[in-house]
Image (cartoon, rainbow, N blue to C red; front, side):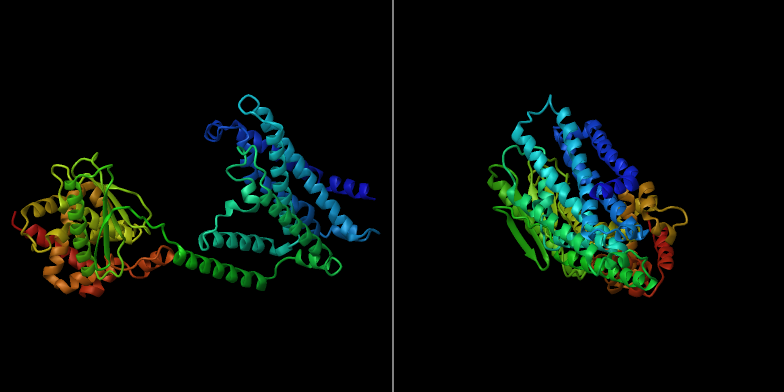
Length: 519
């Protein structure tokens, strides 16, 4: 009778099973032929690891759908239930056929990879045994998981999304490295290279998880005289779809919210660094040299205090509740006037590499660069987008010379007049990046700075400060809420709230002041 069940499964799903087996073999052939991967990993055996990440889960999922989900969805299992056989036997036959196919496919992959690696790797019997043991255990777990997943019927997608959400929550919120546990560790980065150590703990954990899912599949198949699996295979009602959709969105939003609150960049600690604080602004500096000279130490301390003072003044003027921490790193190999971004995470702060003792170094230029980049880091880069770009350019240019009124700086007026297009209007301000590309960075910054000077003279310092604080000083969330805030409260609306005038009317006044200024 068991032979008859096997023949029935092979006759019904033979084409699908053969296709999946060929897909696994073709997958490893494709990966082995990729020369970039071969050079990157250094061994053809790494193709087996890539296959475990990609083709094996896909093949197990398709096997679970073909052997289980399609049977109960099309009600072809009713024929088996009418036979004088125990139900667990029919489920066990299905499980054994799928597992055998997975193990045969994994064995074929190992054989092909071993054949290709003969000339480049020394594959000892112990190493080969380790590869077979880890691959077979991982394949067993993956197939058991997908086999149980097939019995969940119309809730298969919901269960898969929930599992991925839990893994994501563990990785992002709890900071758990999933690659160091269970099946993920078996096929981790040491899979194709570890030749001696037997990973007993991951093997036992993976085997236990495989047994658990195998038992779960058997329980779902036999519960309530096999009617539970049949009822789950029915189509989902409209009410269930609506409820599950709302629950899924709620879970996604909750995970995103907690991920944002728990996400913190690794703190940066520089031994021997000089630190200074001015309000919410914190600046630390160090010399990235073997033996800093006394003059270099004095230069670092002076620059740290100057930048902290300037950044603290900016934070107070813009009413900022937080500011990213700034790290100054002195480097002897940089030229004067070169400020190199350290490219750390925005949550960690802002790092700048600079030669503080170079001939021609300017603390004012450093402070101006730090102020601009600190505001960009505070907004997670949103200030560089087109709606806010002119405000950022104008503030970075206007702040160091904020005491000067409109038309007092002849050089700034000359640059602004050359950069201002004919018929300068609010549409040009809305397309500020295009204007900057045509006029150049210096001309665009001068034009924007003149606009802020005109704003203060026409509408008062309080209105100018309120507008700049509304654009540059607000706290920005690193998710869709930042985009939603920009949509619901765009820059023109913030300008009108601060000044009582429209942005288009102000741009016309801005154009007239520059055109009428004395050269």
